[in-house]
Length: 132
Image 1 (cartoon, one colour):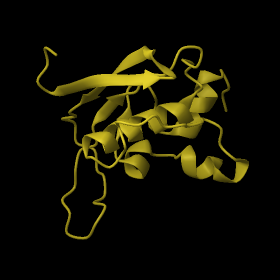
Image 2 (cartoon, one colour):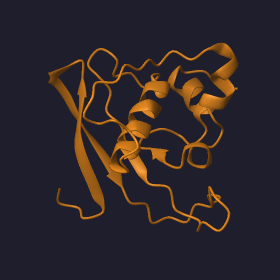
Image 3 (cartoon, helix red, strand yellow):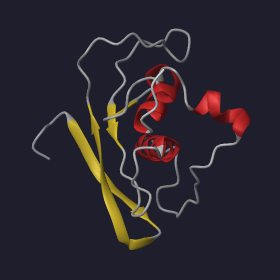
Image 4 (spheres, one colour):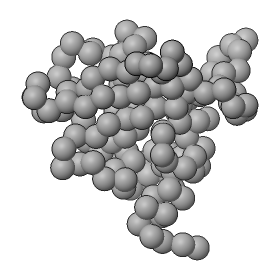
């Protein structure tokens, strides 16, 4: 990549011919995020551009974007089996919707999705054209 603040790689969907590029970008803005563990320093959550598989590349598919972003970040830390196929779904059970579609993605997940507002519930409404 041309930008030294970006890290990119490939995610495969379904087979080795169906792939897309992810991009993780360093963020320089000041965004107050709590430390995960006591004594851990505060961090600026990175921007993640999480690709979606063909036929699922819809702005409303926020849960799948979250899964892909979490998987990419975890694989970079060797906390995800990146050498094995993983079955995932973007379906969310009703009782888990408030936890998954957090009001502050950076605090909940430790990263931000490129092109998606911070409040995921609000983003879902906006992407559907719903207003308060």
